[in-house]
Amino acid sequence: MLSVNPFAILAESISPIFLQSFVIAMIMLVIIGTLLDIIHKKNVKYFFENAKKAKLSATKKLSTNEKISVISKTIVKDIATTSELGAGQRRAAHLLGMYGTILFWVSSVIMIFCYSSSSSETPSMWPMIWHAGAIMTILGGSWFWFFLRVDVYSEAQPWYRIIKADLFVLALIASSLFGLIWSILQSLNLEDRWDDKVFLVFYIVSNLVLFGGVYWSKFAHMFYKPGAAIQKNLAEADGSRDNLPPPADAPEQFGLGIKREEPKHY
Image 1: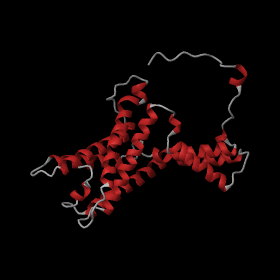
Image 2: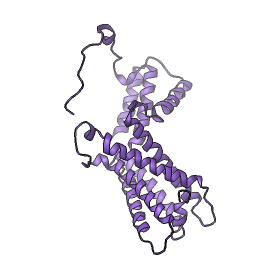
Image 3: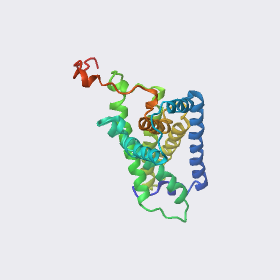
Image 4: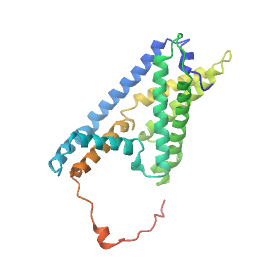
């Protein structure tokens, strides 16, 4: 069951060209939504203007090799492991969902473009990666949604409270869940089935919401946050510190400072 390419079975009734066109359309929606988000929020303009100002206060000019080294370390340490989240459940949930999504999307593209025709045979590795990615995404996203959201964890809001910012994670969970259920039902290969088609429709709609809702959701943070992390570490390396003051040495001079109590109002 988990080693069957669901798109190859679907391609028996729907042209592979249609499946491939759908993927291309989703990619175009992401590009258009991200560009609209950039134009509306003007965050990329601010990012480059701030970087340009920071260069004026740099105390060191980085060589090309030094820049490559900083960027490589940032990708390996900060981006690939989300170290900014620290050790704990939030980081674990984020890593589970992030790598699950990557596996889910990459294997989808490979199976649709390379192994959806009737003349091709899908290596069992790709369907297994696809199903594993879907499960990881569901687990990571659900872990975050039910237990780790700031408004739920710290502000005592009910878990079912939904705001516009939640569109990304909910659509991500839905597309993975509906895709997984559709694949399982379809692989049963029973006669006169209709439920697999229902979940196929749910799977398509959830993908339309996920990729078509980039402008209104947090989808674009996948592009912004890596860029911000790289710029931050480059600014640390050249001494500009993004025009921020250096760390204060007061804790070393005055000891532990004020001992604060743990918050009790959450």
